[in-house]
Structure formats: C-alpha cells, structure tokens
Length: 440
Ligand code: F0G
Image (cartoon, rainbow, N blue to C red; front, side, top):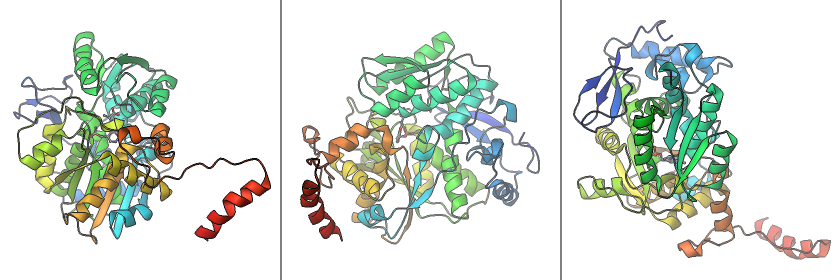
C-alpha cells in the first residue's frame, strides 16, 4: 500500500461543474447535475521532496508493481493493494529528440514522448491500468467502453488479464484496422454501431447504468488518474526540469485534462516550480474545444465530425470542462490543424524514424503552426505527446505514400512511393543508381 514514508493521502470525488463531493468508492461517473467527477486529494500534509525522492528511488526497478511507469507514482494515482493492481508494466516510454520533425516544426528543442510504445500501442494503457484496478477493487463482473479504437484495444487486453468480459462499442467501419484487429484478437465482445463515436458514447453510458457494467471510458475519473503519469514520467526523464510547453492532441479531451491535473498536483506539492503551458491540438473537422476557446464562446458540440485522424473524430467530448479548467490553470492554448497538415507532419515524424498514427501527429502539426504564428518561440523547450503507434493505422500510411488520398483532398506531398521493377539486375541498376547518387 502507499503508506510508507509518505503517509495516507485522503481522497474523494468532486464534481467539476458544481463542486458536490462524493465518497472515493462511490460507483458513479457523473454528478447528479451531469458534471464529470474528479479525484481530489488533500496534499497539504505531503512532503513533495520526500515524494520525489521515493519516485526517483523506484526509477529502473525491474520487477513488481512499481516497475510500471504508472504505479511508480502510485501515491498520486490510486491507493490500491499490490494484489488488486492490473498492470502490464505500462509506461516507461521513450522521450525522443524530434530530429527531422523538429526541423519541420521550426523548433530547436523539441522532444517527442512516444506513448505508442505502451503494451497495446497507445497512451490508453496508462489510464486503463488504473481504471481496471478500480474495477477490480469494486468487484466489477464486466467492463465496457465506447471507442475510436485505442481505448477498446487497451480495455480488451487489460480485461483479458483479469479474466473479465469486455464489451466494446465502436462506430461501424470507422476505426483503424489495427485497432479493430486488437479488439477482436484480445477477445472483446465487439458491437459495431450504426453511428459515430458520440452516439456510441451516449449508448455505453446508458448500457452501464442499466446493466451494471463498469464503464471504462475517460469519463471514469480513475482513467484520468492513470494518464497523469505521462506528465510525471516526462518530468522525471528531464530530471524535473520543466519544459516551456507540452503539445498534445485533443479528442474526447481526457488526456490533456489528465496532463494539466497531474502537473498542477506536482506544482502544488513544490515538486516543480514552474507551470509549463499546454497546447491542445484538434483536427479542424472535429474542433469543439478550439471553437470555444478561440471565440470565447459557450461549449457547442460539433455535429458530424470528420477527420482522417479517426482516433479524434469526436464532436461532443465528455471532458471539455476539465480540459478548459486545465488550460486556464496553465495559460494554455488550443489550435486546429487541417487534414493535409496532419498527414504532412506525420510524414515527418515517420521519416524521422520515430513513427506514429495520424492523431498523434497533431502534436507536431500544431507545434509548427504555433511557432509560425509566434505563440511558441523557436528556442522554447517543447515536449510533444505522440499518443499512438504507427502500425495502428496502416491504411492512412500507405494511402499517403501512394498518393491515394486525393478523394479526401490530401496530397502525398512527402510521399515515398513504392517502385515497381522487373526481377532482374538491369532494372534494379536503372532505377536504383540514380536514387543512390541523388542521396549520396
Ligand atoms: N490520440 C490517440 C491515438 C487517441 O486514440 C485518442 C483518443 C486521442 C489522441 C485523444 O485523446 O480523447 O483523451 O483527448 N482516443 C479515444 C479512443 C477516444 O476511444 O481510443 P483524448
């Protein structure tokens, strides 16, 4: 348990909209007023220096719960006994120098945190280990989620670990192939609905209320707690030196809410002494947060969202209030990027040898745009979050490189086309030598 040197931390649930409090083990996802719930902690008696020392002492552990890049920070994640923790040693992902993608963005100090290196290939595993542990602690007999593909892949894998049925609602025909493959392969009960993600999200909440299934979307506050560890781990990798900016894609808006919440906790504890700014990047066809922020307007869902970055094809994100609260705390900004900008940035992330799925590359496309508009200084220290693995969406990659996305008005500007040749040395010479000469 997380007593040890730090002592017990008092926790409860609190409504982001009206401030109503609930017991930490109340089995509910929303307040009676309809607002989302947050885990609150009384940090007033916690010694931040001691906590940071404890976490640094766990860095590099080879075995056990605390070798996970989430449970290393367990004091600020969830108070759970080791034998209830559903973990796959998630996290511990690399922080790359952005290389070519940094040049493309116009940034001299650009790092990319690759959350696609998690066990099921996306950052969702960080939220899922915590959400699934909460499910186990509450005696859940089954779990469910709506998903654009990554949450469902992750939930199915963690449910398999715990031997629980996983019920998945996905928009029919609209999720990337690699993600659908994972849901089926890990044994998820996969229900394809005739509708989009927002329809699936509305349905799964009703299903969970009616059938007593435990909901594992990021509306579940424990998912957010686990995802805070992305920020914790970046800071630990930087020896607690705070970057100027984090740049992160926004869909259902759980992940940036988690990032700001975690950073605020570190700041309140004195573990960091500066607030980094956060830039949330949305696709311009699925941009409700951007519209609200830019026009300083009331929240308005986007009907019929559309983007090649199917992971973030979301018009009515559940965590918009948490997201707005976090942006206010850190003086954050919101930017939108076009389909072409997403795929060109992706070509650069991929060509740098790093590689990520389309939604992830909003981070790079957005950073570039914010440098161009003077919001981010070219010398600023910037960390971009890459949320998912390149192999999640091979259709998008091959489509771009074969320049076959013109029906979506996307040109393969940096396409690396496959070349057809006859199986003889002459043909290889004819085609290969000029290319090698040009590159050499
Ligand atoms: N990037 C990827 C690869 C995602 O899968 C998602 C969300 C996001 C970014 C956006 O994160 O929703 O917290 O703002 N995918 C969810 C899913 C919705 O069902 O897999 P967010």
